[in-house]
Amino acid sequence: MFSKLKLSVNVSIMGILLLCMSPFVLANTEAQYDNLTQHLQLQYLAEPTAQRAQYLAILQTGSAAEQLEYIDKIQQSVADFWHNKQVSLPFDSMDNTTSLREKNIALEPAVGDYLGVINSVRELMRLSQTQDWPAITLEDLLRPGDIHPSIRQINQRLWLLGDAYEYLADEDKYQPDLEQSVKRFQSRHGLNTDAVVGPKTLFWLNQTPHQQASLLAKSFVEKTAYLSQLSQPYLLVNIPAFQMELVDQNQVVLSSKVIVGKPYRQTPVMTGQISNIIINPTWTVPRKILRQDILPQVKLNGAYFTDRHFDVFDYEGHRVDKTAQQWQQAATGKFPYRVVQRPGGGNALGRYKFHFNNDQSVYLHDTSTPLMFEHVERDISSGCVRIEKVQQLADWFANHLVIDKRTWAHFQSNHTQTKWFALSSSLPVHMVYWRAWVDEQHVAQYRDDIYQLTPAESTQLLSHKVITTDIVQ
Image (cartoon, rainbow, N blue to C red):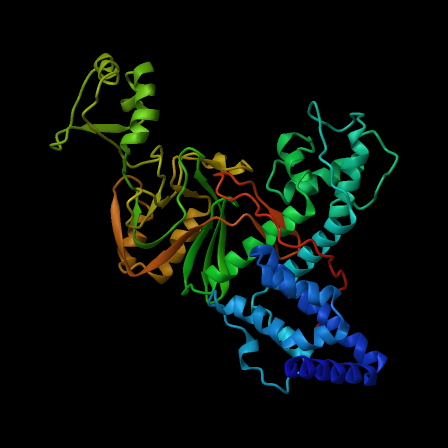
């Protein structure tokens, strides 16, 4: 009885305080509640829990007295989310005299893309609450100039997502304006910008705003938590983005396209330490690649080893020589040999290999087929990572970590002799799998789940309305 009386008194006092507030103060308080909602909503999309659902309902539909009663708990919950991921916040140094607005700002992780992600998520959730999103179906590819009843729906969807600058409600023909919109959409989803609406473009068009918001939130949280633990400098390869970054002193000093493993020969998500650079590396062919790729070629062409500059050794290290016909015959059997490609222009590893110890025979290297970097979708290797700007990366190593700089300089004109170079310290390399982010132009980017590693979306705990006001700073 006493507790009920105490609660009633507290609520009454809150009500009196609210009545005494000026309209300006009330409006500012509401704006700050909206701001806090955005912080909490991002976390709920990334990791939905019953408590976050309850707090969202209080912020969005609760009475003013209830909101005032829970505000400190909600802010602490938002802070605890990041604390549990070892992400520090300015909020940690706030005291009881700090304003609601200042505390809300202090709940933002100190990363440059946070507000861009928040704003993208807010807009996607507004669409989720206000727009139907039925699946678009096509029997065939849709190309510029085609006439199809789905054109209107595609145009509307691109307009809602911000890829079309104008909504042509009564247009059934695939016009040039729509062509440009489709290309913009394809570009930010990592697809070929050919303006052809095929299965992959259609897949992303049919992803609901809620699915997009959830993927973006989950990717942001994972990325922010991961990067907060890294010491610099480091190399980071985002596998589904086909991109590598070299980060030093909080700056991206080199960004490069990369080629990663095929879906059935995946580049693993892993961490390592680059300990050596090899100029003019040899390539010892892994048994799996030998069996699946090389030997079928030898069966067709007995001169394949000679043409591609391979040496073949028995397991005692003795070189084995056979005629072309003999190699064809040997390739059909057990093949008890080790195959090594000599250094040079045709070597599969190219000019440089960046070595780090791991049990999956994965490393970073150059390539003898640089035209492959022109492909938009670059999951085409056998698991290792090929780097487009390999010379720039090697130059950075030479300037910062290579010990024997004189020999390094000498070997820049040597293209046939293999040489290992030690480093003054190892360089961490991180292979990650982040499928969504907001770029420097504040545009949301998405990538295909090339290895099918993303779990199915979990059932949401609460269907709640979404505050769509601008973020308040």
